[in-house]
Length: 375
Ligand code: COD
Ligand code: ZN
Image (cartoon, rainbow, N blue to C red):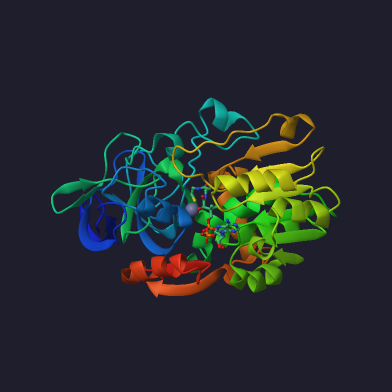
């Protein structure tokens, strides 16, 4: 029996308040309105940004259905939807592509005015939510909310992908992989023969390493305080791995000495102000490029001596690897299908969706790169 046009009752992980585990609840998912798409989720990755919501470092309205790195199959579409149809395999877009606003039309920019990073309304574009639990409206998260058997997204926040793609793997293209890989190949534009330093070896940092290697970097220096991350970093292309805890001087000095004045490209993939400064200082003062990938704790600022930039360094940042999501995701999926990019090494654990709290325990313990939850 078709579910189109009807509310669907299903399981979702609801975060009622910060510093608390998820609670698996029965929720009601309303049908998609005009220009919206309802998706049956098949798989979702667990990203550190979801954890930042739990810890209060990423502020978004609660209660909410979190999750933003998923893949699924379109169940039904609202009026006027043209880019996807029921049965299509899709990836929800954490960084939507409206194609209409000034920055969306700018060829090198990917931040649509309709993005949720700034607004964080916890709603659909029309200001309402499609989730209800125990009679209460539940917010959505970054326009995606993938920790639910069914979710509803705006049409600008979903991309159709190859019907043969394995959703339990390509879900990583919805956030972590693309954010890291694009930061290297598209935002920094790493050059062949160059030297790179990557701070933070989670799923996103390792994807930066994959990007640096693909771009032909000669030296890729991986930096992390958890040495258990080094084996995987080397497997994916790091040429050296260093642990700041092994030195009694700042890690930027170590990197400057290792590279005769600093690397060509550095990446902060942790989300800490001190490591953002270390990454900046570890790139060459005259021509180094440092890219901020991690989101800093809410409402914290850095104070910077302008001389650090005046000598010629470039300091930049981007969300979602600088990619225009709706255009780029199907191509990245095609690259995965053509075996041009690896995703499997990033997936260390696969769990049933109901075990979501275990996935976060693994993340906190530094034991997982990516856990994929299966519905
Ligand atoms: N020095 C060196 N390494 C450190 C330090 C430190 N002081 N502190 C932590 N680390 C290491 C950890 O040991 C860990 O290996 C790594 O840093 C972080 O990895 P994860 O697994 O916690 O995180 P990821 O890779 O899943 O995500 C990291 C980001 C910071 C990129 C992510 O949380 C984020 O902020 N993304 C923002 C970009 C974005 O577009 N966000 C929206 C959707 S994610
Ligand atoms: Zn993410």
